[in-house]
Length: 205
Image 1 (cartoon, rainbow, N blue to C red):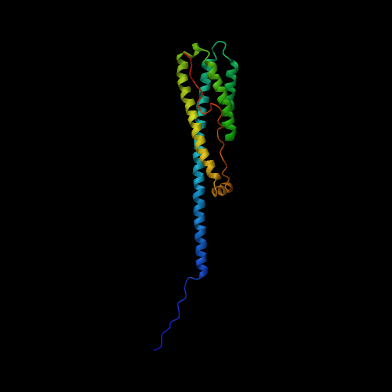
Image 2 (cartoon, one colour):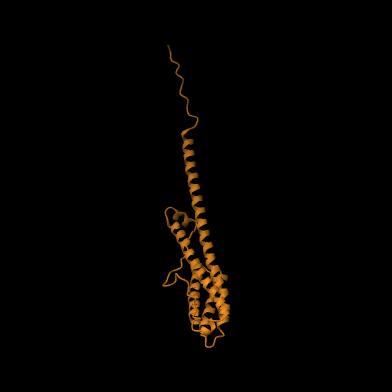
């Protein structure tokens, strides 16, 4: 009995087509990964920028309070005029960095100068109990305390999210994509002795 040996059917999908499918699949997966990482970096960058905007807001609030503070204390007899001049100049310098589109590094430097001048003014005011006992100054004191605390919190929050972002763009292989698309590190507020707490705004009434 003769066997009916039918020829084996050849695959209608050639090898080169399978190779092409694999290559396209790899390209698709790589593209999805790149898009995911890029979007993640954009989100992280946006979080840092939003946090920095909060720092700017709190410094702006302080800048708005300075004229009122200066006006309140400048009438005190024998008050240190150089201290008023210094804090006013530091305020102006900080405001200039906002209007000129200065880098975050420059804004931080101006903010640091503003911090120092403002702290010295607050310390100087302590020597004038008659001034600090007024209702006007007591009201201003409450605003200053709240604002300085908010500045301290905003700076810490900014450093936290900026550190997370900076670590992310340094990790392999994300660092390659970050370098390719120009994702740079954000500067951090440098801690010096006592800078982690807000200036004390307490006066001897």
